[in-house]
Length: 112
Length: 118
Image (cartoon, rainbow over all chains, first blue to last red; front, side, top):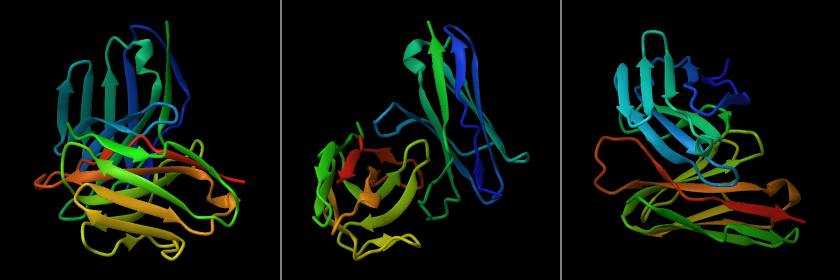
């Protein structure tokens, strides 16, 4: 079993839809969670950074962490064609270890 | 803020030659930089971690004599692929942690370098 599981998609939604992206993990030591957006042939761009269970909102993006279920989500409201990209979840144990473990990424297409 | 650049963005080289990729933090000092490689439709795989002024720490299975990393300053790290072969063709991405970032763990990524070895 891989440490981080993420459905690779592709996921196709109409413009304006609410998008839900998810990752599950098996390592209970993971404490810090990130979501990155990666456009084709570009480096990942940090979207959200969280370290506690619960929700964190930033504009149209909401990151949700449930440590008891080892499950994290990213919600995108009012999705736009410019949101079309691959979304990667990443996590780390912290405590001085800076190594990130990534999910495979979910490819999202928002259709106008 | 927290901008990381890479150069070149795309390079083609012949088998057996060496290629150097630069990673720069443009508006911050980076005490730690990371090098990843990404194959098509795959996630990022960490190759090595470098701290300014120290030798890089390589992940298991990564040949340190083939992938030479130098982190000579707080704003520059280089990855040299020596004696490149077609199987080294990949997307190489660096990332950095900001000096004084404290106990936060996010990394800022460069735009990546596409290496094609013919």
